[in-house]
Image (cartoon, rainbow, N blue to C red):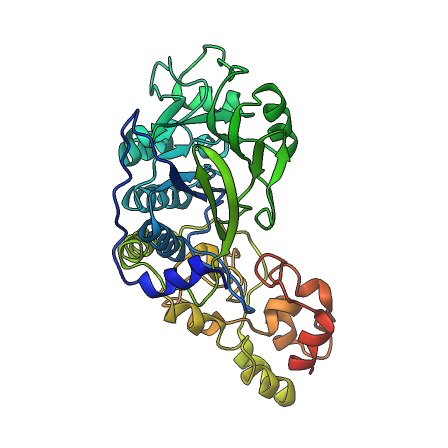
Length: 414
């Protein structure tokens, strides 16, 4: 565990604090960049195997620890949402924006993914973040002009994007983008790939740091192109990067993975709990699109004929999957519920904890399919035999990093 993580644990119960000193022209011999980004709508750790990594509540504690050590500039490289359209994505964008505001973010780069939901979503982000929200190509926008750069501790921070069409469509800008000049200095938040970052470093070689987007884990080490450092926080908000600058030049790079031993920050936890209440009160779970299918009957209907299999299931974590969500106040969150119930997305499957309590938890029909016809005609209608394919739709690498079908199957063999 690095020193930042240790301080985050000890300072996690302290409010996010510290002055960011966003005064143009102010110089600092030494300052630390704290870098977040690419949340993709993941506000909290999600998964069914340890270690569960990530979460903006833990990120806030790490940022507080960095601030306690000295002058710190918090930067976020966009992608609040997963690039899809929906009411819950907008709720997530607001919650992340509010969290970054409380954490005193100096600059937040608007990504093309954030613009998919349109003007309303971007306008909400801007109303919360104010001038900290920056975007390339939006300076002369008709509907929502945004600056393409800001200054923190005398250090310019630029917004650069490879998705200008999405951004201009959301903010109402038709003007061509003014690309960074070859003598641009400071930091670039790039809504683009590692390859895009290398091209930018070649054309603007005086930049100190370029933060780019990538899938998977954060950059383990900085990549150097000339004197410019290229780094990525990875995806789904699982790490906080820190870069020490001396006289505006990067000298030290570190990654703090947001593991379970980092406590949640109380101020951001309050924002997160408000988000969960909003999700619940909006009845998003009940309003999810439904398809027509055969009826799901629940695992209790299987017990009389399959007593041994039912006993194995009852002692597995599958049977209590919905209770796990309820203990974390996620039992009305569609993002989480889908892999914790039977028949989610079917008009004759799980609807809500109140309306269909018998379908809560991962049950027999989660893998074998609807059992209604088998229950009525057990000899003539057989249930499908299933294997690994039934598991991997929920046990994906990002949520079950240690998943091994042979090992997991041994726990529930029946």
